[in-house]
Image 1 (cartoon, rainbow, N blue to C red):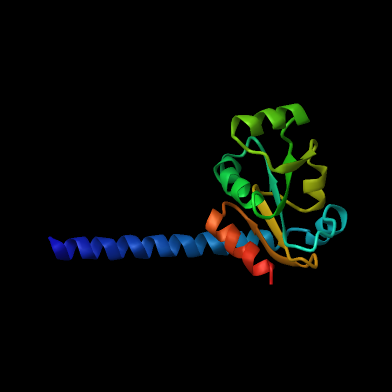
Image 2 (image 1 turned 45 degrees about the vertical axis):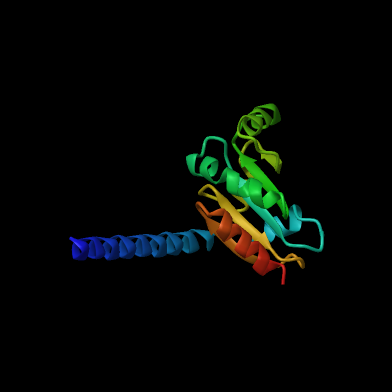
Length: 156
């Protein structure tokens, strides 16, 4: 019985590892199409510290799952989010209030900014260092720990 449990634990661990690697490869592939130059020139003002720019939508289930992670990071770092095709400011503010979120957002009502950035999947995240050099970009869900580690890395 103990041997079977060890065998299943190894199989489950291997499965989780393979899925994690696969998800990261897909994220890297999708993030290669993002237009990072437009973002760095139009939105980010010098603040002499790293900044996270997060592109999301209220109708996106993955964005909703990741929203608490963005909120946590926003309590320690500069965060700007871009809400795409999510209604007017009042609708977004209501959504944020209902979900206990208070990070800053830019309302991209018609998706024009997202289109300029070549963002085709949500959420998409960009992390810039203090000198406004893009350090990380990715598409999809990222954990709080992953975001914090990237922000810490960007601080150096």
